[in-house]
Length: 191
Length: 338
Image 1 (cartoon, rainbow over the protein chains, first blue to last red):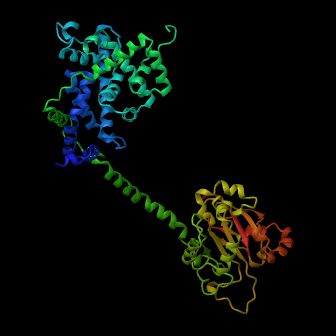
Image 2 (image 1 turned 90 degrees about the vertical axis):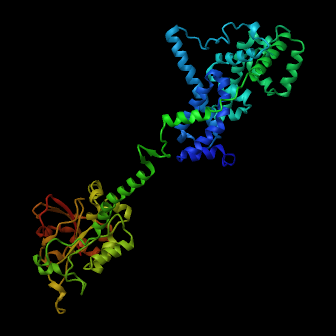
């Protein structure tokens, strides 16, 4: 019953002191948020693994949490790095085995027979959006998710990702532009 | 209108428009442009729809056991998380405290010893019995004279009055008058730290070069009464002898001056009173060279000034009769005749 009274930062401070229960409470409290980020950033199929990865990295890097930024911002930074690392390694893998140097991964098929017509106006179309997000450049994903899904301010994102506000604005604008390009072929049928 | 640039062609502009970050003038200008520009209207519409689609994408709630799985995974991969600061089972904070304490224990005795050393009275190594009787007497003291042949100088590292008082207490035989003279001829602490016992003299460079390692020893001095006195301060009051007093200091930076084993007669030294000489002493203790020194504080004393002039013809050759205890290297000493 102490969880609602304890802030995220207090839980992390206790966890740094070796209180594993505090870290457990922190994980339970923030799992929905991190999972939501990851669904947008990497897709639903990988969201569980990525959420787990984020918390594992957070646990291992507890000493680096200084408490001068909100715990969620610290976690978002870890998530951002996890997303970038994941697609950096995938891109390397594809270059090695497919000889491709494309910056954007291919759009995964929504279903074996998925086509614009079948996807339009249904739950499939929304799934298509989620899958399409995988084509976003990794460095744009978390900034766009934090801004357009979580509705963080530019300043909050800048603090979290340790970037200048101008850089954050630029990345979000370019991410949004990329998103538009990805969705353009089906945009008329989506909403 | 088609030749004018389309603001909506820039994703930065569209992004700022979406975030309502355009200035009033920019917004008014773009509204005017958009009403007549189909491509800009389409671009804005397309941009907004893509963002709406993005926001409306499904956000399935995580599985109910996701947190439990995450924690299980963490426990598996990091079975026992140690508290902050614990590495390899060692608490770094306590280890640091322990290391600091150990360092203090190791270093403190050395520092203590180093500070204590100058406080030990720099007595002549020779026993009183080994010296001529006249060396056992100080010029003016009465009760403290008996054992006093060497007086300690204040340590260079702590020239405070308190330390000097402590030194004096440790070296009770120190003659009060000699101590006063000594204080009068002492340079300032800075000068002493730079080895400048003779900072105004010709020997300053040589002493400064080697002063640091043995500064405490260098400041020690050795005094000896001239012949004519009696051991134990039992000088008959009816004897009106001229008592000559020698103050010997090492100026070569190799520690304290060697003890005086033999001195010339009192009469021969009487003409040198009030002067200073630099002696080059061989390892065997024999004085090889004597050269006059100039010390402003010392030579300008009123009672010595007149004799300084008259004695200027002398070269201090009488001091060649001095004999010192053998040492392992030639020594350079400053001798004041008082």
